[in-house]
Length: 375
Image 1 (tube, rainbow, N blue to C red):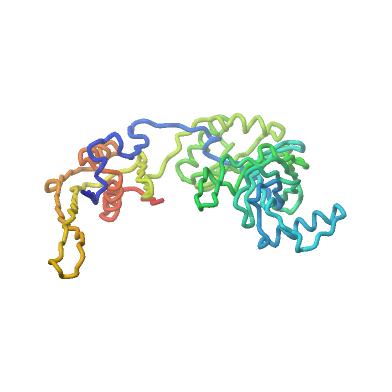
Image 2: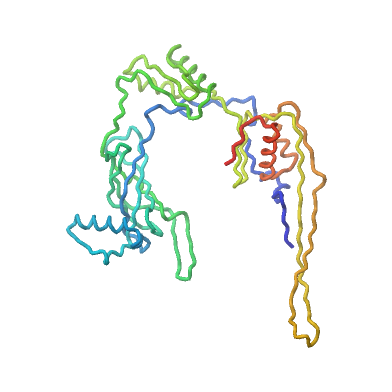
């Protein structure tokens, strides 16, 4: 017997497995955050580096002859060593073309080591066991600021047998070289003679920007900071020689950052995240589950004697539709909080898929006082 349940009701009797995450379910509580966790300083973002190179030492899992860039790169490399190889001898299944990227701190100095990410550029099947050849890494201004090389770690494997069976763990066409890049230039960032800085909010908000400015002014003085717009707070440094210590003083200050009322739904995983400020207008919600049971029983059809027919098996299907009651209606008056919303959903014994449908219906009806984000 096959059971098809339209509302994914397999988990409805166990409320503990409902994937409903309620954030800050007590509206009276306030969770302050440090300024350093709320803002970035303009000009102090990580630097993105990129380069092209080859990975060698592969066990026949490298690029084929169709990857012309690999053939040309190997030919150019061997020419530097005094060798001139004809095209017909270039069988390079142990070599793969790769792109190399790295993210570097703005304060990285010459000699600092950073990790690099290596990803296949051609038609290789695996980078397992490969070694990255020396690679120049370029900054956005096209200057070489680091060099990288070393063994590639992919943290998995990719096996294909002659019979066509495939076994794969993780992804074998991208890997990491720990501490594989060495900086060849110092960062050009200096805090000498700095008199002002822009603090950029990671989640722009008018209220949060004003509160950050107020916290800084309480610590440094009434005119030290000014909220210019929802995404930027301008910080004035009175003593340019104390810029570093000034930043250290303000970045640990606690601020009660405001949050936008938001409901985030991931339909692929059935996850629902509800923020603390989410409210509901007066609304009534009904919920009911429908279960369809389809049973199949084989019936043997025997032909008449001397008819020349054959015996066949014909399945006979019977469908039964069961509706679990007439449904339950929950009514929420006034402006319901997250606690009220969680209690309502638990009383209705809904599954994650049902929760998603309910939130979408509440938004359409205008009862959900929050932004609905579907991932």
